Length: 62
Image: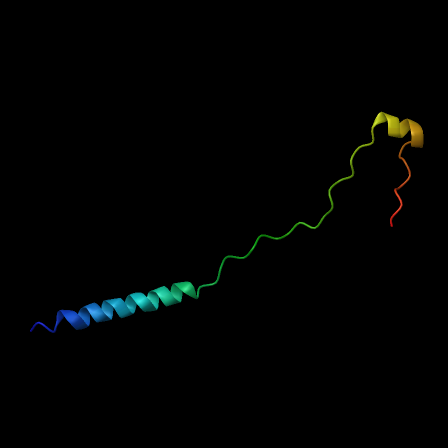
C-alpha cells in the first residue's frame, strides 16, 4: 500500500520533463525585419551652398 504514491510521483516528474523538453524545442519568435534604406542626406549649410552652388557636387567615391 505504500508503493502507490511513488509511481504517481514518477509519472508527474516524467510528464514535467516531457513538458520541459517540448518547451525547449519550441521555435523562437521571428526577428523583426531589417530596414535597409539609407538615411536621408544631410542638408547643406550656407557656406557650402555659397562655395559650391546649390546643390554641391557629389563627393568622389574611392
